[in-house]
Length: 402
Image 1 (cartoon, rainbow, N blue to C red):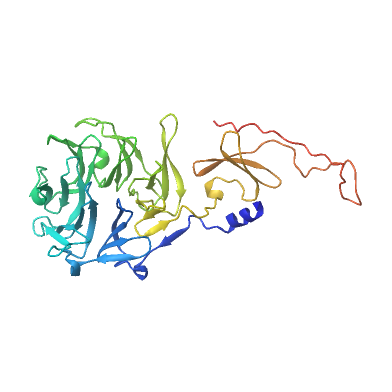
Image 2: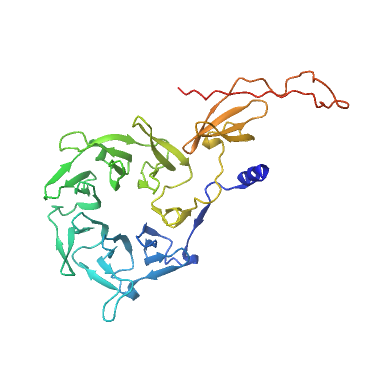
């Protein structure tokens, strides 16, 4: 069984992946957004409409079903289970199973909003809309939704491009100015707006997404890399706590930070990397897949997605040099008394590796080579050691780290 396991690992692909395309039923291969809902469905915003995936088949919705425009940019499920769709011509309230006389899509702001770049719901149930022509609110009263322009003063020529509603009830707004500078606006629940500026956001530091993790840290994905926001930043003070930018890559743009159900944080920063926090609170990026592009969705089976690309967690994952193994000739795999996984490799020189997260660290213990010449204790036939040969059990200490 052990040999069969090693054979399977040797033949396994790195991160089993499946890519869904129009051949599988998607209306377009260009995905603008993707997310999972509370019912286990996966939703894809495409340039040819909205698509719902149940794990087997795609159900598509477009202008023929009443969508105000075929290009869908963003999608939101509210706390009460309503679906809002952001298109290039306003927003639409989506009812997948309309009753008689009710439309599948009820459009709002087709002429007032323009192209919708983001949607978010705040703690009070108000839906915020970022559009070409400003920031708008959708509020519900007696079962009826109404659209109005918000109190966020976005000037003509500038644009609000993204939202984040945090645990304190603040609404964070990624504001982009026409001169190429980006700002971060914070609107408190009482309507006060703080404008936060930082040199990092000037000259190309455009904010593409914002994420609050379970530690209540706020991450900014920008055109100049990944940044961690300072705790409770104030105007005129320090805004950025730390910048995580990968060198020697074609573009410094960071992807969306995504937290999976097991609490792990992922980001596309020169490949799929895990954001790891040690026992002392120190943060580092650990490479998971140099050829990956991060994750932005998790399905009910625990598989991770990036747009229409699914990475299966249930399959084999192989480890090699890029994961820290000094050599790939596996001699032994065992679990230590500390609960960690250890791997021994090497023929003439042995290495002991310990798996830490998704990466191995290695030590080279100074033990006698199994190939040094020695005289056997007894022989059973010419040149064959007999039953009297001696085996010695070695006890290794836990590897020490700098």
